[in-house]
Image (cartoon, rainbow over all chains, first blue to last red; front, side, top):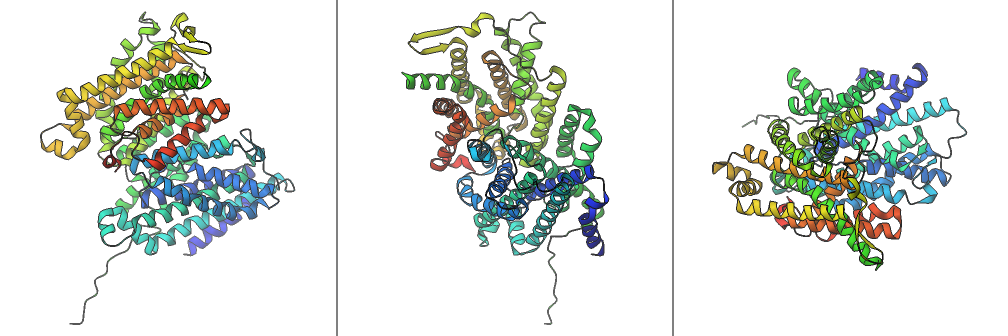
Length: 316
Length: 290
């Protein structure tokens, strides 16, 4: 507990301690942590494999841009952008939930591509070529870097702790029952569709918030960047490498991803070849991810979300 | 006449989409694998046709005679090694494996052949077309690709319904455990299905290289179209794949006619409308959805 509090203080003070370019790297790191935590919630706990979460990253970024054009401070717009994504996710679930398994995954991609193309036709938002986020010009570059780091870090903190408490709650139990045996969960009276829908909406809001802080930290907003399929690829890679179905997994995966990126970036395309080969290797030989392997070996959990059945002896 | 031209050009593009999607449909329908590397494999076939065939003194037009058998063999090997191992786990694993393969293939191609566009050399045939009426031009290459798509789908239909191994493939696709209990070696059957799928991927990649230029990153966009074709047409229906391809092609041409930037959007909207009205696809069975 003390360690956690210390870590929170340290990460809050980070932009004043570390060099400026490292603060930018940390910002990108926490954006990835947010996205991967949300993807893990979708896939690892609710069984929905989305390859279209970049739809909500993009919509979150563009909602922030829209509010900023209307005169709102971009930092204030972050929670509203998340809310917009949650609201937009509702009708989308009614369309997507008609499909299961792989068909669902494909449809999420089409939805995201459609969102990209529609946003690209709206001239006010910069069309296909993009435009700069207004409302940040009064800040100096280093102030922008500091504030966008803080915003990203707070969003990440809220998303990760929120996910932790969500999974410890009744909803977490419901999700675990669906994951383990959907038919049994249904027959025990669990409303599977409603549970999935609420998770999809939460994940949309989380990715929307990630998109909002992305739009602030990299304030040139372009459809092909905000709606990039690469976001979905990174979410998938990071969650699977770290360990699907654990809170720690996506965070550890994100750390590994950034370490790889920092050490191998000079190698150009070889960096991506190594990342791709690593994905194949982990999937085949270490399917529970790095954290899963570690946990199996040492029987330890940092953020336990499981429930133990306790034997209470009766007095009779 | 404009509308007739839209339908004709859409159907011609749709023939390519159907050819491209039929391997995906097979992998999806039989192995239940979402192959995220499907588009990249087609691009690899294009590169093999461009760089290997001239060395063997095979003309571009006939390159498929070399590339298709290589890919069929490759399909069997990749299935029995990488893909089978991931199917035995869960759908997440197949996604991650095929995604990893896609990244590796794309970047290896970039490293080896740069980002320059290439195309399969078919001489003067590329520009020739049939001109039946005022504004209607029908490119011979596109027509040949459409014909190839119909032939491949017809051959596959016959193979799956008439031959012994074809029936085994359908049995394993319907109920893997029941087929296994009846003595089918499902891993071998999966290998054969993957070999056929890869062979059609090779054909599609070469067809693409004949119709237009391709680069290492060409796989991604076409993969989205192929996915749309499979879902619009309906899983497990080969004719659905053909109709789905043509429907997508026509929708895109129609969108492009209104505004060039609406081309892909119109295809996506067709997909979403089909999803809303008939989620099992035009020719799919309802129970094939699960």
